[in-house]
Amino acid sequence: MRRRALLALPPALLLLTAADEPMLVPDVSQRDVEIQYSFTGADLLLFGAIVYPDGRRPSKPPDIMVVLKGPDQSITMREKRKVAGIWVNADSARFRSAPSFYAIASSRPVDKVVDERTAAIYEMGVDKLQLSPSSLNDSAELDRFQKGLIDLRERAGLYVERPGTVEITDGVLYRARLPLSARVIVGDYTAETFLVQDGRVVAAAVRDITVRKSGFERFMAVAAEQWPFAYGLVAMMLAVGMGWAAGAIAKRV
Image (cartoon, rainbow, N blue to C red; front, side, top):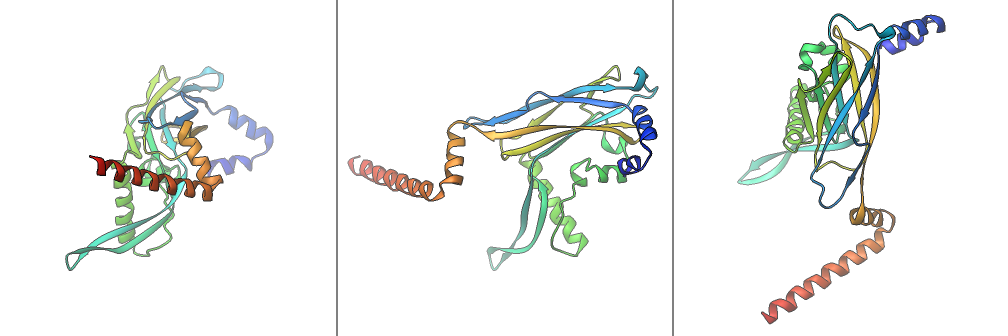
């Protein structure tokens, strides 16, 4: 909202306004994360500096929030129900843009830093994620499915909240650590840092992170994508061969 308002100002006034605001200079310990067969997750260090105009620091210490976000996914949640002793699919809900991974760290609890409206605009917290549901008009039922999705991904280590873990040194330098689960998917991730002063986001900056497969896993993924017929044929032949070998060994034992 505020960025659009600034763009409507005359160029000279826009430069003056921008010069009065602090800036963020962020970085991340790993911009390329490679997934191999032994990948058990990663611990990313997100750090940087706050640059104040004319070097003047505010009398009240600022707050920092760091959000690590993975590619969006379209996902369907289904609810199981027991009918005549058999578990069957019952109600379902589809979300068009659920982050495959989401982690947030903050210098203080989010509700102590910003109000509900600001948290919703910037998606600060798993309960503020905009999942874009494409079904269900019942808000209570939709809320139940959304909480179920968040709960499942929290237990899988894909949604993480770490309030009060961002360290700010002398009001200038900051650092935070966020875990990257072993279950993450490949793709482009973003690490976005927010500088908050008096409940208002005064600066934001983004660094990109790429998660990709390497080694044999990458070869297999590329083969399955580029040569699906040959990949399926080879996989079938390997399965038949291994089955035959297992049967031959069993007969001799």
